[in-house]
Amino acid sequence: MRLTLNRPEKKNAITQEMYQSLADQINQAAGDFSIRAVVIDSNGDCFTSGNDINDFANNSPMGEGSPVFSFLFAIHNFPKPLIAAVKGRAVGIGTTMLLHCDYVTANSDTKFSMPFVSLGLVAEGGSSYLFPKLVGHAKASEIFLTGRTFSADEALQMGVINRVGSDELALAMEFATAVSEQPPNAVINTKALLKSASHEALNQVILAEGELFKMATESEEAQMAFMNFLAKKSKVK
Image (cartoon, rainbow, N blue to C red):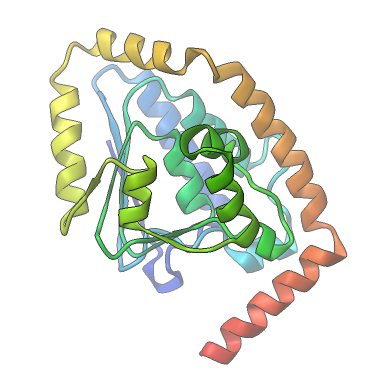
């Protein structure tokens, strides 16, 4: 199954409706034996600019049972290979969702960022657990606390992604085809074993992050950061 973020005029900023649609499709794929893998890609020149800030400011979507949580738990619990093909900007959830993927490809021009602290927020999607586990505490602290952007080459060196190339979708589909030809139950059981040591711990981290994230969005600090962000966007236009 190929799922394409298709809001290029808004740099594929993700709304609550989009989160729910993604969750529904991924959960459907989980129960459909004819689907052996899911590939997430995007239309336009950007993977995603993250959450739709206006949608976010008006109604924090981080409560348990919300579309965002439905999506996060869909990708966390998906039993089959989850693959992403990334290009342009991958902001916030555009980077944190990749930590749940089994294989990620990126264009050489891709820029990744998790600017939660810069927006007065905290890490989400289990990233406060998965990212330092992957790259080490020092590097995770550097990136989270500054919100700085990092390149495809740096993402490759850190192990966030698997391949860099000019045609990220072709690379992703190549892996999807190869893994889909493997014995499906062996693939599912192997993925389960790879994730077994941290699966339940990650459930708890996602819930805890969600609570802190929701509290942060309601804070004066975050509201000011949102306004500054939107003001900067208006000046750029």
